[in-house]
Image (cartoon, rainbow, N blue to C red; front, side, top):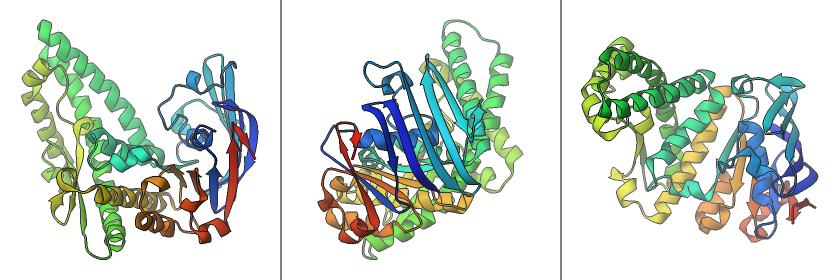
Length: 370
């Protein structure tokens, strides 16, 4: 994928700016609070139709304005495309090649990003939600079935949790609860299958990268962690797995009523990460954490390439200053010429000379692209 240009109007601190990009490396440089990350977020927004920082659309409008728009031209395996997003009168409209997108599923796979931010450096020791987010972001971006199953799973989960809270105060018909649990099993199983398939692929790629970065010293292992018994899922006996999954939900129902939420399922799962057979979450040093985070992101890129046949856009938001010289160089070396990359930094000393020679430097000053 290649992003040719982007045009912003009243987006965050940008009034009206247009920027053309190099097909290789693009370096956004400027002091803090000038708009470098906002420009990067606009690229992420075009790909995902939401902000990388979780901001609501109304919070993305430039102060004093009442709407914003983002448009861009990009090249993917389908061909040359134009995407436009307008947020006006509290409503969002998305057009791809002048065709109005009614539902997000119609847009999935057109433009895909992998973003690496300082938050990702906490992926090893941080909350399990960060590791689930790591899996979900790219599966949602590349797999329509996963996207739809995730939406349905969340709605059904909300309904079961609502019933659990009601059951704490009054008797609930078991048949009603079972009907929702059957649906939870149906879509939860799809999510689990696809997550485990992704983990099985990325762990091999990540371990190869990790072994090289650690000077052929450390082995990295990643396993999917869940309270459900995966034996029959791994044997592809889906019906028996669903039967066991449903039974587990029924068995946990009374305790779930006391808790007020569903305690098992993909929404509670995690990744177990080990370095030389030792838990990374419990014992990894800060340097090891950063190395693993780096490897996971690079493995994510290769997973997407294998899945859809082309590389995504790589967005690096102020991470070079967080990495030591060795890891910084390893990251930059791992960026191949076929991966269009966007980097934010306050200092070009973070970037090696080879990358500077083949990259485009874009200066950002108070919401202006210079």
